[in-house]
Image (cartoon, rainbow, N blue to C red; front, side):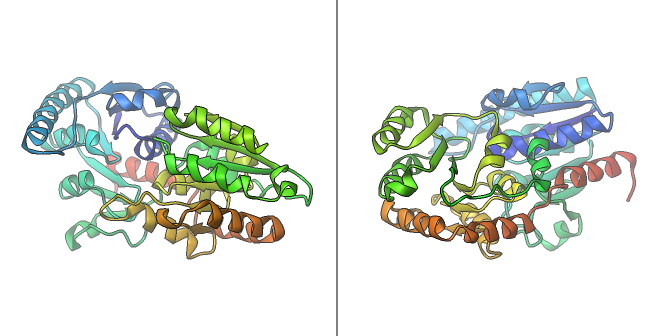
Length: 362
């Protein structure tokens, strides 16, 4: 039995789901410890027992921090009981505060642990847990946040992506005909992004009709933005499918000629593995600017363009899109560059690390 522990957002859950797929193919039983937010992703964990543990961020004032400590304490006790019941060989943490109770309890109970970091900068939960972890799996060669002792136990595996996405690595970039459809996929991250819902339809409406008529939009958005977004596309005469969540992301990536998205680690990994050019609009309010760093790693190789939020205007986006219609070879070259940044076998690499630790191999 292997226990995975992850925060309940897509950035933590999808790599855990990819590892679960790999471990199950090797004959392991797999369970997941997470929080309530992850229940909407249960379809990604077929044959995996999902356990919800108490947890909370240590945020706000003194009262908020005290509530967070109490919640984490309860989660730790729940995690100890769970570990005693299922007796996992190893516990793997994927970051986010809900990953802490199970991984910390395992470390206190002398159960081997691995932590996996999706971003180029270690998150707070993984920094807290790294010193006691037997191995630290990284998505990036030059990750920030490890001291010299921790680096000895670090292994670069890449960021695992779902099998349906990994399979796209060998699929060609869809041809762009001069008068053919242009498929645009907008990914706002697991919580959507209001700025994408505001700026993208305004930008598309500014394009000449000859380009506008070719566009097919699929856009993930917040529930509260859905009605207004649909109306904006209808008014602009643009074909659009708008929803809060898409279960067929691999299919949408396969059809897409261009992605516009936030730059969470899982989004960047999936888009790069699929070999799709992207315009990334990093979330600007992380203190460590982790999304900006994720996006720039692809942009520096020529596989994406980064537009910071205060420069992400309808005029600027429309001008950039118009150049793509005029020179579609730009997107073709960016697709190749994006794919050169991918590690489509990251799930297998992380699975190999789990097996080696489980068997006691160096």
